[in-house]
Image 1 (tube, rainbow, N blue to C red):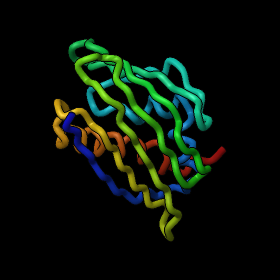
Image 2: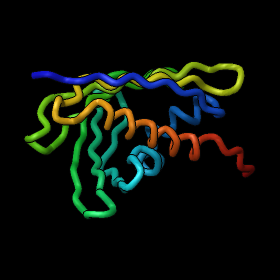
Image 3: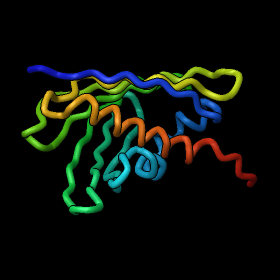
Length: 148
């Protein structure tokens, strides 16, 4: 089966701890992960190595939803997150792997994300677009310095 891989890079004006938490807090993950035009719901999340998660995205315009989930493969606090992603739709077979690396830099955190095993029927450019939108929402969540 043919699959795609996307690689993304972004520097965020936030400490690695805040970004790491945004991947493992269910409310935060649902807030920033869905691309523009989608809402998200986290149905379950056990953020420990070997733990699982399940969530769904809903197209706000059409109301169509799709669910997916997976297993946490690696969790190095404030540095690295790796998890599997499996769609519940049988038309989107296979297992994707997402690896996110966080590195503290002088102005915040360098984030590198690699998503491998994307089913061929999902165009790579759509994944890039979705991730770019998600990273904008992530920045909006983690960059503000709000007292108290």
